[in-house]
Length: 382
Image (tube, rainbow, N blue to C red; front, side, top):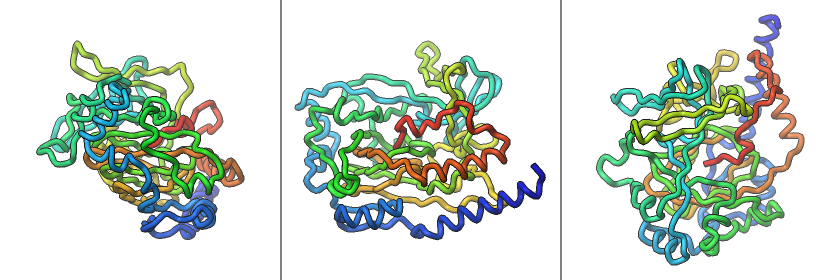
């Protein structure tokens, strides 16, 4: 395509982003009480606008029974839950992109420490989307391994110290924690506002050593923090052009006990995954826990990406995260959260977003219809 047509399309896309963002609030609002279902539907669901509210779940026993490590462990054991599945990954970057070159991939570095690398099996070069290693562990062992955010030196991550995160998803609250699901409930404004039961309810348990990389979910997400704090970075769907989506070979982290090192087993014969690589720099080094300025966003029409929305969600607060919004998540200290996924409406907004994204991909010289899956459709969240 001629350069002038490319340039005009770039400016059109930039105008599309600017015009769309002009309809959004300048910051994610914190409301001191939960909205009524009607106010939620009119004010947020219709506009697909995120917000945080306090006191949306005052009836949940979890706010008392799960408040501390000791009380949560006691609650689990009293309900017969002695072991749970956790996801383990170096630097806490499970469900993340890595860049492979000559059969190795950088896992990251913290401060002045040397860059840590992993051997990659069955992939010589290119991006891989790597899932964490799954382990079944004793509840008390896992919970006591987590930081409360105060221990000296605990915030300094070391690849030899595995970062574990209870994030199995796929309705784990009603499956793995079924004996404790009575401690939580639905969020009333969401249940009535959406007019249906949650498709999945998930419990997330971790600390600051684990994070979730940029992605989107095709679910309406209602996310309640029970103890600790979550930090969400959010971008509206119109920001796709900045997100540097790449096709990634599927892979999985594997801990090699004999060498005390991590490896990645790639699966090049499985369907590829579309994933954002903005947290991987030009040398292939991932950003571990940096802010928005540590991301390597693409430019559009020569202009940088507009800033992401930074949102802190504290204990007792609930975030509404609209479907298709990009997000990455960090946490501070020992944190437990519960999220409810509701089916999104697949309507003209969905098809319009896909149309605009396909135009951008065409200008990048990428084929947007060759079998790659957006891993967000696999219910990955934070």
